[in-house]
Image (cartoon, rainbow, N blue to C red; front, side, top):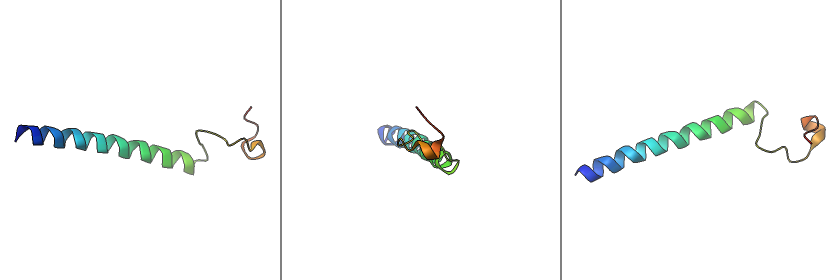
Length: 48
């Protein structure tokens, strides 16, 4: 029974971290930021 509880706790922590990362990515995209510009420098103002 202890193994199941430990696994559930670790799983909940991992799911929480993934949710926070996804939330951060969504907020960044809404703010117009991204991990890469896609080399369309007319839109990003010159990234290189």
